[in-house]
Length: 478
Image 1 (cartoon, rainbow, N blue to C red):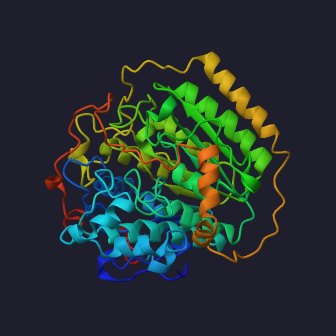
Image 2: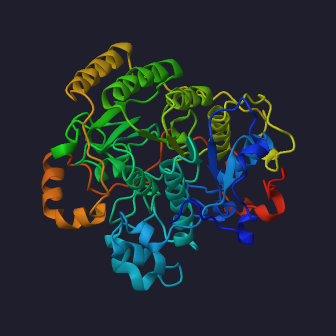
């Protein structure tokens, strides 16, 4: 995929990169690139499935309504090719995703089972197109960072961190994050991956578990004995071989509040940055860590979530920001629109713009920062968090400085390395991270924090963006 080549067909409104002089003021320093394909919001996992791609249309609508697109270069990136996806995923899995449909699924039943196709990851119409769109955006964003063409890239459709090299998992079919980091590692010696989704970033951790060139740090809800999806992310998972100690997990309990979470995040991630000295950062900003999320359990506000983004942005290190989880879709859109405003250094009004196409779906308050605190007691005591922080800082001291990496082009794809060392991988997963491979379901049982509301469980409320959205077209604002 060529970072300078972007789709110009009618399905993407003939979007082209906007010249910097067209909308960037003289005092505006950072170069921001924003990636969105208007088709992404029209896919449907299923009527009862909690993953709603429509949230991406909501997000983009608010971004445009706040006129934040005028502070960025806007791209409709090309879809990822089969070859792009096979940079990490095994060919047989990609072939399956490409060929299976709801109509022919019975003849693929054996493959569906071995590739973990389930109620979490169902076969739906346009599934492979969906994967190509969100993965293509993340790969294109990474390429722009490596070309030094931009400072910050945003792809809210990406961040699907559970997918493995050979199977789907947790609503994720293709791991766009791994694909993007692979591109970054071709230029940057060290990449730091930060994950603030409420679920552990197991797919990314697993992909880079044996290397010191990508340090993975995940802040997530964790329960003993694998009682919260995906069941991984304990303190004992630290990496193996060259990757030993370059995997860091911050397991948390229900009820994390703003003050506790932000303080812990800044404390730990500052030490990570100082010791690892990353050349580029990938931040997965999953919004299911917000309060009132259907599959969550924290009490975070949008402002607190955004403060983590602001903190990392202020490092002035090349940054790729991705989406992820988030199942109360109005709040997901609010969060990612707000974080877009942070990334472009623009304050936006508390009241949502009334001319937003999806404005009516944000009632009854129609505000950017509705109260999200649910009555979930914070089970993370100050003593527990202090002990956790101390433990992690002690572990970070063992890094003994940033690894010295001789920059070179990868001679082999990660997927090939996986295939060559499959037996060894199984051995160390059984010994060191036994919870990685056993399959779990995000949707099994009822979530104790499910809050029925007006979150459009019926997908018949989907709308055609051709009729409802305006955009930046040929350097003219909507």
